[in-house]
Amino acid sequence: MDPYRFGYSPMPSRPKLAWPNGARVAVWVCPNIEHYEYLPAEVRIRNPWPRMPHPDVLGYGGRDYGNRVGLWRMFEVLDKHAIRCTVSLSMSVIEMYPEILEAMEARRWEYMSHGYFNSRYHWGYSPEEEREVIEHSKATHLRLTGRRLRGWFSPAVSNTLNTPDLVKEAGLDYFCDFYHDDQPTPIATKHGPLMHVPYTMDINDGIIYRLPIEAEEFAQMIVDHFDTVYREGSENGRVMCIALHPYMMGAPSRLKHLDRALAYIRKHKDAWICTAEEILDWYTENGLKAYQQHLGKEA
Image (cartoon, rainbow, N blue to C red; front, side, top):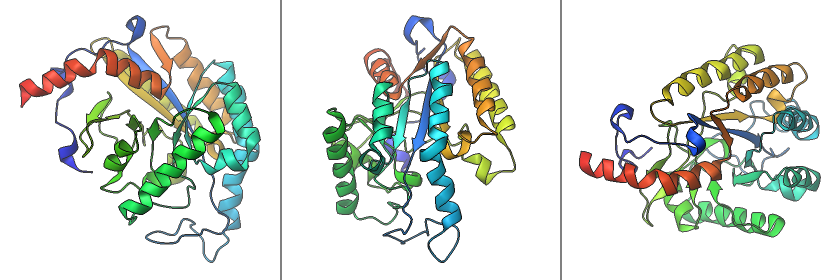
């Protein structure tokens, strides 16, 4: 991460950020709906599959399960709690699986690009290669939804030093590649400021693969995280992202724990359940100017 892309500001000294209707915390739920190639076309800095030689049938099958079965279970729980999501989307998904696009469109979900395949990492990409993927994502999104793509999150967090510049150059409005704050942040690029909407690697069910925890503990992490930012949000508004993967929390043994955590959050009327674009637009209109002035005084 380039530390010169955003100024430092300790949270206690910032101007108060107020969310709509006095909400303490803006909560956005982000399913990562991804496609992994059975036989990866690119194997560069890191092998996309843990087992060699390819194909890694075990790895592929687990992830394919998410799109075939797990996602449809997650739809039921998210619908139950009236949660409209912003999807971290491998853009190939909506080309390959029109049924998934139809289901998401029926729910009025938003999409930010998570690259084209989640098995093609951007580490080591030249600016031209990375620009090509961003432009392909824009074109695919526009063609299949009729809407302009607004957000970017690099596949498998494989961003480069050029990513913010290229995302801004492409005309996108926000990205989620940094994990440095509980509020939106303006990011400096060669083409003007780009907004960062807080994503999470902490409240992210991917940690079930990486750490010795399971869904019940992960759901408690969601509740505990929410309790903290909800309390802090009485003084200054916070953002909470809940990052999910259909092949993880869409598993039969895990779904009830996601249901429990979302039900707990829904009990709090002054929690704003929203999307990434809603956070971006509200903050840009109501919080950004005060924060920029604050940075100028601190400089």
